[in-house]
Length: 254
Ligand code: FPP
Image 1 (cartoon, protein in one colour):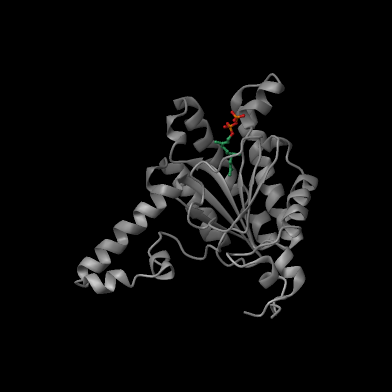
Image 2: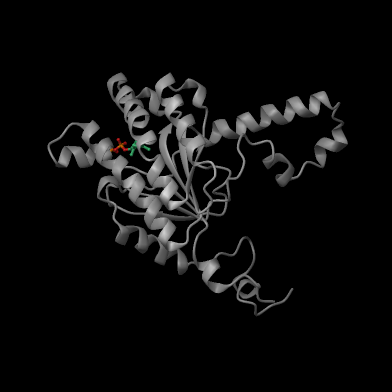
């Protein structure tokens, strides 16, 4: 049986996740310090959300700072946090104009106070928007997210006096409800710029069936055309979710 979901909506990813890699190399190419690459990269954040909105995407999540990025030179970490703290609140009115809501993934408690305050202000100022979500992943790691979910699950089941039988019946959907976030859709398309071909602990749970797209383009150079190339590539993929090609194409009903 053919799905009743329209062809167009199947062909447009609802959730696009991006690993914004290549800021440092971009800066080096330009003879600039690494931070200039991050600064230039941060202007692409606003662009990509607006291009995605035009394309009909509902959520864009961006890997802005991983649990491993704390290992970077202290100066670079401080500069990235300062960039967040200064730029985010400046985007509130533009985000409201476009209907973009800010969400976050990751443990914000470890971020400097100024960055947390800016995030809170921007989240609060955009909470009513419904057209697109910008999900900033900050101090985020896919493995940590799953561990946090396991901890919460164990706490809840311990408190409820969990039996072995109940444990054996735990489903994927039930466990997912313990992951420390809400409103996040499964990742349909995961893009990594900068030429590396790995997912670096990003969205390990939500990207279970994501289509992966790698481009050599460095993040600060990422353009509307580059996003469109990724969306076109996605539109040409056959998403089978474990089924056969014949089943997906409606040639077999069972
Ligand atoms: C990876 O490039 C990039 C990051 C670790 C940081 C990404 C952060 C931004 C683009 C700024 C976000 C800002 C806001 C306001 C949301 P890299 O430094 O590893 O590049 P390289 O591999 O070329 O060295």
